[in-house]
Length: 95
Length: 95
Image (cartoon, rainbow over all chains, first blue to last red; front, side, top):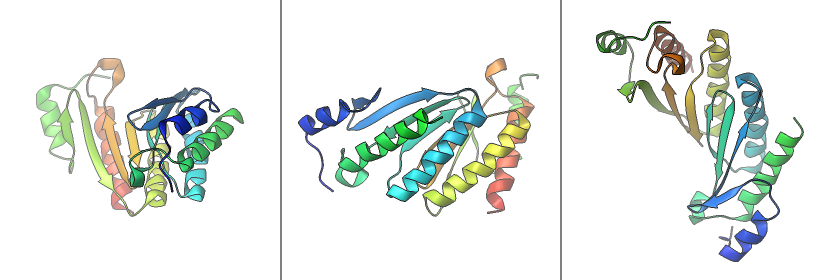
């Protein structure tokens, strides 16, 4: 899996909604109604991560969820990160 | 729910295994086999949190889980935190 260039990252980032690029990773935050709704979304995301063989650095406090994606193996971003980011967006939009 | 004194916290902490007290919260970290096992444990913990009406600040990266407990409403630790910590230990020990 190839590490993306800065130009490729900018181009990929433009196709996402509300993700920031910082410290070699893309990240975003979401808020939901309550803990139950937040953890339900996390569960759907967890199954998708497992299917894609790619996993986030993420944290949760009650109804808020912070997600950070990068590819540890290459020390930066790859297409895997953007694929998963789009899947996460699709899951959250379908809620 | 009463905020615990430093002395009460020390006494409660001694009954737990592997938790640290720092910045007004108790925290611990665990490592599991893989993401699937980690998220399964998180799911069991999530149900217990919901049942107790008390929720952690927690983060996960692949097979590692970091958990931080405090009671936001009182700006410190209460019995709720230690009750949940014991439940989390029981869940993890039963794995």
